[in-house]
Amino acid sequence: MSSDVSLVLFPVALGIVMLGLGLTLTVDDFRRVATYPRAVVVALVCQMLVLPAVCLGLVLVADLRPELAVGMMLLAASPGGSTANLYSHLFGGNVALNITLTAINSVLALFTLPLIVNLSIAAFIGSDSAIGLQFDKVLQVFALVLVPIAVGMTVRRHRPRFAARMQRPVKVLSIVVLVVVLTGAVIGIKDELAATVGAVGLVALLFNLISLAIGYAAPRLLRVGHPEAVASSFEIGIHNATLAITIALSPALLDNSDIAMPAAIYGTLMFFTAGVVGLLSVRRGGGRVGATRPPARTA
Image 1: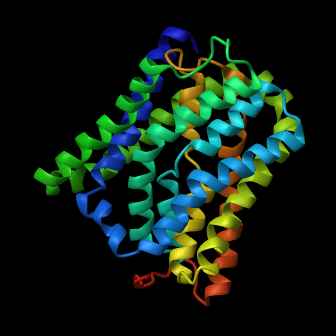
Image 2: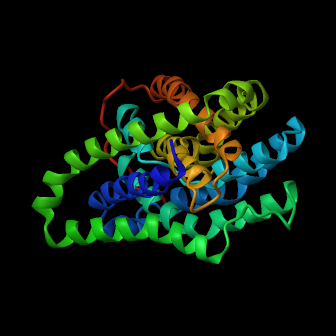
Image 3: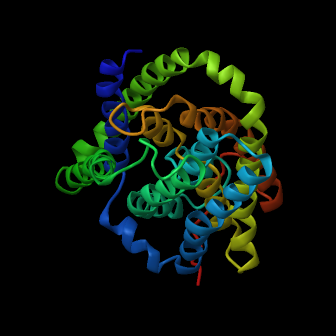
């Protein structure tokens, strides 16, 4: 895929995904923090502080080469994706909590992601590197993520029926665009990807499993209910690999295929590991796949 084409398609793909997310959000999703304060705080602390530290430890132990190390840290800094909502619904999680966490994480990541990425580039590649998310690039990420979400939320607020009708078409369109764009990107880096799987595959798998485990165990240790812990596990364990790949490959942002490798591998693995964890959570909670649970208040 040529740089001119990807320069246009990557932002368009990400913008469509974020617009679709915005169509599902309301202001109440942000206000719902008061309903699940403990669950939200625990999940956010794990997402923003614990997981980047865990990822850094894995990267250092594995002694990954600099670009792959930065790619792992970019992945760790990425918020949860909308896929977490689907898994939570299938395996008895509190979907309302997922939506709340996705909304908050998407906003907070606009500030934490550039910070973590730039610190990682300075530490692993060097402060004089041409790679990085400088202020103008941070503004581009801000515009790519927050503006479509804000547009979607505005449409949802003023035209709720139209927003409800558009959710499915926008979701289908986002999937089609992402498949086309990411397939083109993967084909363009297939040789590098094949050579990289051995180096970073185990690290990505361990990070995914640890994220899912921490996302469930930390809330339960602090007496958060099982459905909320399941929601937290998927929100924390299913990172937005699409966002990480877009930032890494977009010519207007990092424009580095090596940095995209960990997210590309992680994005494939997480669908299988999350499914296994979901089945285990159903057995632990005494439910069944696809069963819905009434939301429980969490102190």
